[in-house]
Image (tube, rainbow, N blue to C red; front, side, top):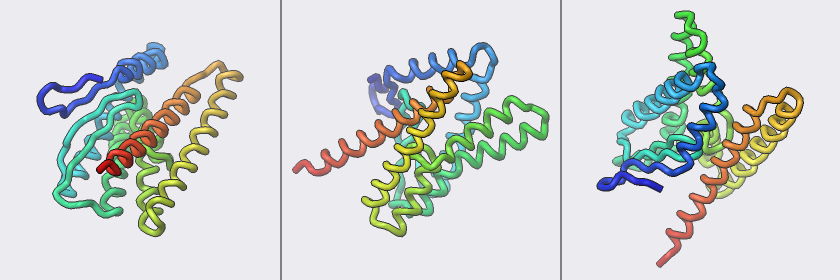
Length: 205
């Protein structure tokens, strides 16, 4: 992976250009890719604004096969409701801007922004909906149990989307949903492996 040499605030893996290439291929000249990237930028700005309200600042940015991921540092540990607030800020920013675009009759930008916002509300980490659901479960259950429930739910959701995507690919020769489901599954696995690595690191003397 490549990192910014001094402060290492930016991390780019070889999978990120691969992701952009796949999105460009799926775009097929329609012109949705720039609008999708704009919607993603709006989404991340929503997270940044909410994190700032909670006393956070950007520590680093990771660009990988699963997309852009911001890491924040905070003066004090966050509560579960603050975690949920920050997670929901991204989709809310998309919904608001999508509504504004729609009233201006900018239908393609509206569809891109609303689509990004709605997709991120799916209850599977690393998506924002999964983070909110985990916070709700962890507040009322043992965090380890909440983590296991979220992993099972995310796996079931990704598996269902892969199945539906395969049907769409066979019946309609459209692989968009299948690739999206595989992307989500990869994000779940990367997040799971990252947490297991962190646990092993913390257990070292």
